[in-house]
Amino acid sequence: MLGIIASATAAVLTAPVAGLLGHRALRRAAHTRRLRVTAPRGIDESGLVRVGGIDQWISIRGEDLGNPVILEILGGPGASNLVFLPRTHVWERHFTVVRWDMRGAGRTFAAGGPEGQGEMSLDRLYRDALEVTEHVRARLGVAKLLLVANSFGTVLGLRLARSHPELYSAYVGTDQNVIAGGRERGAYDALMARLGAAGRTKELAAVTAMGTDRTRWTTEQLAEYNKLVLTTDPLSYDTMKTVVFRSLWFSPLHTLRGLRAYVRAMSFSEPLALEAAAIDEWAEGTDFRLPFFLFQGDSDVLTPPDAARRLYDDVTAPVKDFALIRDASHFASFRHPDQFLDLMLTRVRPAVTAEPADG
Image (cartoon, rainbow, N blue to C red; front, side):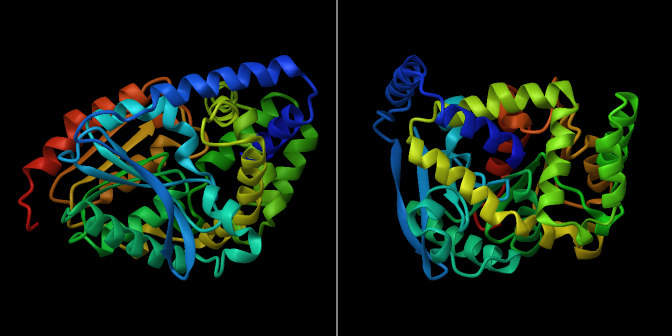
């Protein structure tokens, strides 16, 4: 993913095309107008908050403070979800959405630079997430947050949901990572098959040489693998171009310098993915004491739905549900924010609002 974003961003940032920049300015201005929160019970605030010893960016948006509060756990690692605001702002009619640029990501990285991110580990991010949770609970006066994690963020999200049902009203995973201690190799095998069918012998040899043990990969190999997975699948490649890159390019919250920082943050945070390469979700526990939901893209080749379904089948929870998002690859909730919102309203919100306040 990083390789695709970095290449496309670099190409545009070096293109001396005034018309391109003019079109970008117009689109960004239109997004800014459309994203204004004017409802009397709404909230739109963002800024740096001291978390884990460093300043981290937190955004809180919604049209009614009486709605359930979502805490998003972003993917990447290092990829801020703030760029998707124009696609997902309709969610804010029904939920108050908290988007946190964790250390090594987005505006937190831009504010402190690489030297200002402190300890970069999954354990540190976990502790940061708990601090953010307490900050949001106090700021909004709510007992529990609705935990929504996507892509790499689901690694952290599962740990939070498993350990702290007293803090979260439900867990929703989308683009759910399933690592299974290195046993899950559906995406790897499917990539090998696509490369073989396309006669791409050089790339096939490179992926074969990497082997299936991701704990032995370098960050460069991981980046190349993800790039190949997403570019050899037409739907995934289209999603990268039309959803991810367009969201970046037209983001009203990111200047050209901000786009450069966004790409640098993802590169800086990549070692976190290697740290997660040996996680075994079954060994860590499949017993959840809160409602549990997985919503996966039906055609996701990076985090295949079959693997997510196997995890779901072994989960025990007071309420659980699994659904496929139609015509969706990775980034399913951002490609089809309408489908994702429908699932949140028809399946998740009833379970959240039916729960007693004291849990």
